[in-house]
Amino acid sequence: MTAADVSLKEAPYLDSIVHNLIANTLLVCQVSSEGKYEYVGKTHQSILGYNPEELIGRSLFDFIHADDLGMSKLLFKDGLNSGHFDQIHLRYRSNNNNYLYLESQGIAIYDDNNSVNGAVFVTRDITYRNLLENELARLGQLKSVAQLSAGLVHEIRNPITTVRGFLQILYGNEELNQYRDYFDLMIKELDDANHLITDFLSMAKEKESHFAWQDLNSLIQSLFSVFNAEATLKNHKIILDLGEINDIYMDGNQIRQLIVNLVNNGIESMEAGGVLTIRTASQGEYIVLSVEDKGSGIDSEIMNRIGTPFFTTKEKGTGLGLSICQNIADKHKAKIKIKSSTDGSTFSVWFKDLKDVDYNSIHKDNLFAM
Image (cartoon, rainbow, N blue to C red; front, side):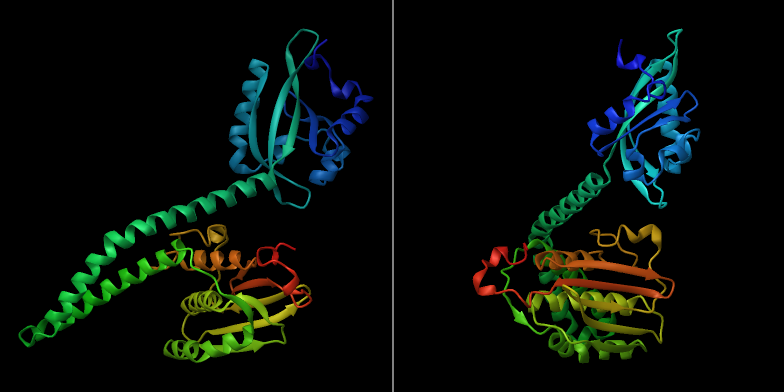
């Protein structure tokens, strides 16, 4: 007798054996040739949130994400015809309406006439693994940006400097006064290109960090006049709502750049008359810096791409600002969280509150590993 000869629905005593063997890590089910559940293991409740009894008689295709449904049905049909079900990755709706990433492999069930009349599927939840792979891919993109930056700086910055220098010489020639508007425009475009290269470099270079205990509120207040001047030009208002917080062990220059990028993004996202609020607060084990704008919000379809190098919704954006912020946050073992709606967006940075840590007794490399 082979595994294919055994029907789980006809051998209920196997349920406890299967449950113990898979130790709450795998999903086991049996379906008919129409894809309807005939047997459902207990782990469907612990992993997916469904009571096994409520799934019996329902089609497994009712729970598969629309984008994965066509391929799932095709592979299922091929499996019925061939007796072999290929491994498939798909998104499956859990009881809380969130989709989990699953990896499933099937084996055919045969009737007395040796015809395939269903299948047993063993499925693994790979949601965490998928998230990890996406994160590794994102880090790979950042590494590619760094490598690209190192080459661009030598190949582009030097000729840009040369061209800009000659344009400035021509600008000072009185005989060419009628062309000064053109010279201004060309110099500005070169400066914009140079700014892009500078952004590349800030991601590519492993700059030496200078960490120290610093007052985040004081750092924000030192930048306020600059932010306020820029906001006034665009008819915006900036509000500071700074709470009582402990000092943060940070690199002041890097955190300054992070704040500037977040505030500039917020200002650029709003129509005239917008209000941007910079907040700090102590929340449990964290010190939270948040920048809240009153823009139109971020479309849910592009939310997952926010922070990806070169991805931007701005007409003249480089798509590197938030990547740089993420880079800085990673160095400080901080997390960036985004909340967005049609009323605006809030970007918050969650730093560990190390107020009770005796830094002198902890090696610098291990400070954030707690």
